Image (cartoon, rainbow, N blue to C red; front, side):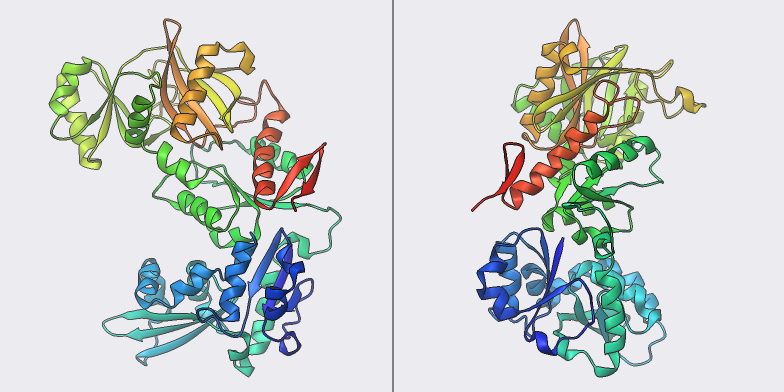
Length: 499
């Protein structure tokens, strides 16, 4: 990705950074060459960021041109709102108190240069503030009352850096701009940059290690440079064109924050944050499937006022689910009236709403992969040994925690099963993204159980029928998303830039 630093006067700017263009704000705003550039990152170091100044318009027009920019116009405005600064920094209270615990004075002015501070003891604080307020050059004001509080943040121009700080700033800048592999000598000519988010601590990861290797190989063959990133790398997202999340997604953890930030940064992201929000909540899924006549088991949204109706409506046994249950966790079965009372007590203590669903015993569940509104793979997941679900996390042996599988080509699966899966995905999230649809087949009829926005793609399981083509199709979807956003369309096997 091309990198451009925008400053008021390039002749007075000297960070000594190689491989980065430096242009004036006037040229960037008025020269049509810069308006037509795609696949570029703009670093706005203009002299002023005040509303309707040149610096403000650099960020605003960069976004209008579909270019990635730091800071963006929203960040510039956020920094001018003290109450918003206080809200956005609320999660940093612990690191603020720890970092400033030895300060004697009641006010502390703190400079952040490319996510660093000239005093290494404050590097963590600088890094955390940069993750929230992404601007290359920042200045923070802390005031101590009962405890230290962040009272103000502002982006500063290059000419406000004290002379004795400049050697440090040049060093920080060199490290900052050297993070990307294409800033180093290399032979490949990758068009785009892909981050794959994995978490070694994820006990039921949606892709095994070999599948991650397959994703990397497919992406590199299709013109991507690939980095494997982890849960602590959210501040690196601005370096990439695409994010592939390969750990279990949840609304209340870092995976959703990664997806949301990636979307804000203009990346192609799989899974998209709206998909995580919708598919992670079974109350939402139940409402949408009923409204769109998606064939599914009889389902009831249960709360404290109607819980007494569950046994009467479904009989026993009945399946109970937390709204955000995944991989069979948070899913239980009540077999007796006493068990129903006890389990509803437990679930309603955790969530105001839970799901009750008729029990439909079967030897296996279908999992139909759907990519961009089209069926991708078909797989039977058989129940864990001696259990009613495909996962049995209470098993004493890892071997019996999950059942067997049988993967086949889409055309080998009954049309009714495929049609139900595609119908469910389009009703819930539309025709963009990768999804796995769980379906029960009873007396030849499909019943959609749920739609997963982060389906398993394991080497040796979901890829048995398609092989490496499965990974190429998924990466190809992300590549098309990138190229649509930057104005490239396929033409006779090549690409052309829209006028």
